[in-house]
Length: 336
Length: 205
Image (cartoon, rainbow over all chains, first blue to last red):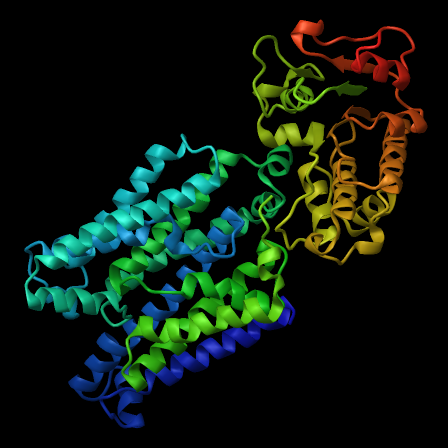
């Protein structure tokens, strides 16, 4: 499949899923009721369902999927590693720890159940994710290799995980349940304010990624070659890591630690035959991420299974199939 | 110029310093009157190209993509006809649509040489470019370098491949790298040959 006709196809799939999502849900509203509510007419209940529940949820899924897909692509390109995803920097682990501190460390967890769009758990996640980003910035100059960076992310993950376990052991049952629920991931907790913030981060991220696509392409030929072709290693590292980190932190803040989407989306796009230049993959990846997120959310709502379970149940076999079936996916990324 | 020397005597370090990738311990590297280490990476890429001994792995770029990026890096217009020319003169046009990862190490290395030629009109630094190549590949590389010389480019080649250099016959200046205990780097003045270099390196002088 070539990029130029994958785009309209993906756009159409995304639109269809968005519309299907908009007109389905547990409320059993009539079509006419839903249509009227969208136009601002009709009953107050239908209006609330459409404008305060379904639309923000669908927009959140679209933006989060796009953001995670892009972050995954950037990390796989930057680390030249097919297993890299938005999670490798430890940013989402930090965000999870932030939420655990807020939710299990005493503050009320009422907000997690869905009302507090800018509630304490979101603030906790943003501070936690931001702290890891700041730590990364402080130590990055000392790393001699990108492998060291990967290990840093892994260790931050273990550290945060251990602290979360400590907090969980001492938490009361209700708070613990709410926290575990948050960890399953959901696009339902976000509202219009968070959608706006995500859009404000995603737009410049896509723009930068487009502008830096030549540098990112040169980077895949190895750091030494890229540097002698005019790539400023420092600028590229900061921008790539910063962009992916911010996107991952924002998605985690409102949707929980969403699994697999960032890792699997670029592989799906490559499996469809769109590969090569970064600028070729950028839009297909963004649209595929959004489409998969919308599809997963639809399954969540129809089957009542948590988001992360849906994504992992589908994502893990897909990635496995790609590896077994094509075999070359790993050799393609052989480290230089 | 051909730079020869035993492993660990600083050939790669010298080339990387010339490329502005490493800061010189003392002195400075000047290119066309401007200091290389003070240049921004983008400016530097327009004046010199560098090929390392290891061909790139883990990239889905096609040969054509690589050439487009090379022209871009060198500040040349990225036109289809220039891309074709660059691939033809580098002898890699038959692989144009193939991804670099599907090529063998030797083929990928030839692509990187063609890339360097497309990028720089003036200075090309080659750090043991033939390490992965078979006999024919080595001859082809040396022939490429000969063509660049005729086109007026300056080439600095670090190599262990004295025979291939000898056969190609274009080497006009030499530099022999030796450990400080054996006298350090040495720039032979007169007509120097690969045989003389070999003898010098093996300590038979």
